Image (cartoon, rainbow, N blue to C red):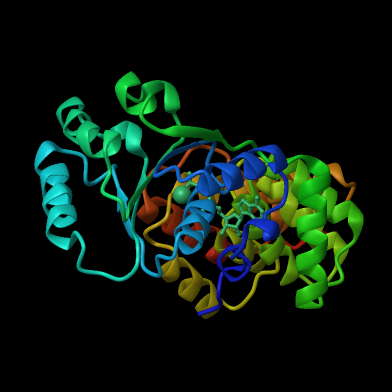
Length: 312
Ligand SMILES: Nc1ncnc2c1ncn2[C@@H]1O[C@H](COP(=O)(O)OP(=O)(O)OP(=O)(O)O)[C@@H](O)[C@H]1O
Ligand SMILES: [Mg+2]
């Protein structure tokens, strides 16, 4: 399986992060000053987890504990963490770091149980709390942490990130396409890198743009796009079945929208639509919420009698 670009190029040092310069400077200072409890707030894909892992390595912790409060959110979960903390105290040479994601999802009891350790953490213990919604955190938690707010990447930082990765990967992708990616990603680095990876697999700028047009509707699944292309090309039925099988756990409505968007883009670009293409769009024009219904519709379309335009 191909490694995701956003994992491959996850910054390992503070100076490898793009953007958020003021926040990073303040963070460096706080680490130097001996802060032990940090709160990282900011939208998804803005670098909170990445930065938390870097902080762990800066305070000499090789294996931070990562927990997600979306599924470790109750009082018993927090008690187990506190037990772990107590049991591990003083045994290890290196520092211990706990990174807690989506901390706004902790129950009130669970959050209250954390207060003491946040207020007086043992010498070797660091807590990094991450949240996409800081306003939902208990005030008492917030007041015990040094807070750093991560912002979405500015266009120029995103462009630099994308261009650097293109160079390292040997991609030649036009600035126009990169700018379209930046526009769609709206500052979310993870999303931008996912889109970059998708377009890097498409040969021509035209295809890349067609793909990005489709994503503009909010569907960024490369699998949907590839299968859609296969449909419009009327690829072998066995290939289409294989694609449908691969995607059967996905949202049929998302797939249908990609098929419609693809056709719409062809029309709006002034391409001459084949009768078969128009038929496909007809089959797909109403919402489809069941995967079996989309399979049925595609089967019917594929096996419907081909209209021979020259005979009409
Ligand atoms: N400032 C940045 N510079 C370079 N790459 C970044 C930056 N921020 C994020 N990335 C890229 O985006 C990916 C996702 O970032 P990260 O996991 O740190 O986001 P997050 O804020 O924790 O998001 P979430 O709230 O979804 O957990 C990283 O693996 C990295 O490739
Ligand atoms: Mg994260």
